Amino acid sequence: MTGVELVATALTTGAAAGLTGAARGTVHELHDVLREAVRRRLTASDGPGGGYGVRVLDTHATDPDVWGTRLLHVLVACGAGEDEEILTAARALLRAERPPTRPTRRVPAWPTSPETTQKTRSATT
Image (cartoon, rainbow, N blue to C red; front, side):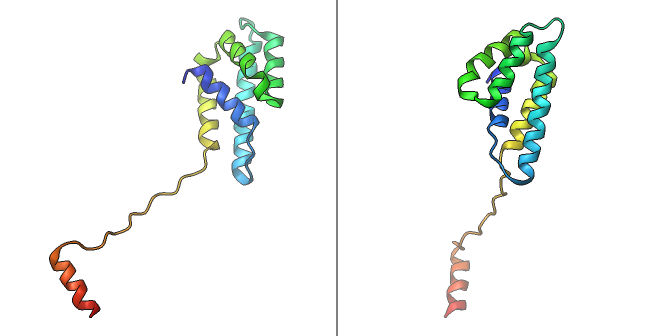
């Protein structure tokens, strides 16, 4: 996944986050941080895109399916895929969006050695 694809995926994920509770608040806050970083990049004096790029960014939030391709073009044009601040914010958002994983518990296997099997048999009879 390229940097631009990472940023676009994070923006889409944040716009569509249907989470509840604390995760929702965290994801929305991180989405706002990412959008502001991209907005700064788009409106930088040397950055291409300007007003059009900001409109695409804003409109993408309302309908990511329709505006996804245009967003990719705008992100490429402004160099968002190489901006470490933007990439860091995108990674943080995607990490926060993932549900926490439970650690797997190892279930002890039944004894298989002949001595243990014999002890188990005699204990149950």
